[in-house]
Length: 153
Image (tube, rainbow, N blue to C red):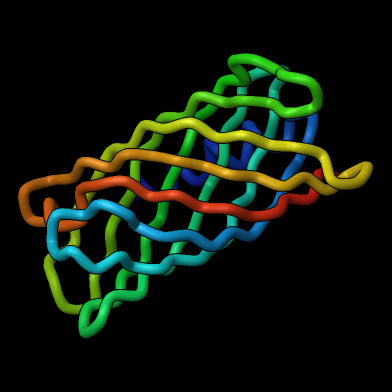
C-alpha cells in the first residue's frame, strides 16, 4: 500500500512539472565490498525538472554471476552549477534491491551527475553515486558510474 501511495504522489508531481525526461544508461559498480570483480548494470529512467530541482524513477539491472539484481530507485536532484553547456547536478536517493539469490533490502545513495546537450531534446549523461544499504544487502555497498542518454519532451 505504501508503494502505491508513493507512486501516486510521484505521478501527481510529474503531471504538474515542466520537462519530462526519459533515458537509458549502462555502467559499472566499481568498488563494491562483495568481491574485487566489477558488476555491469543497465537500466532506464523517467523524471521531471521543476526549475533547478528534479525527481526521477529509475530501474537498473545488475548482472552478478549467480545473483542478478533488480534495483528500483527514487532520486531527487538539484542543479548546482552550469559550466558552458554542461549542467552539474547533486543527487540523493533511495533504492529497493530485489536480489534473485541473496536477501532483498533497502539502500540510500548520494552522488553527482552531469548532463550535456547533444541535440535539441537529447542529452548525454554521466553519473557517479555511492550506495550504502541495510546489513542484509551491505555486500552491494560501494560506488557506481553510469553513462547514458536522455530525451526531453
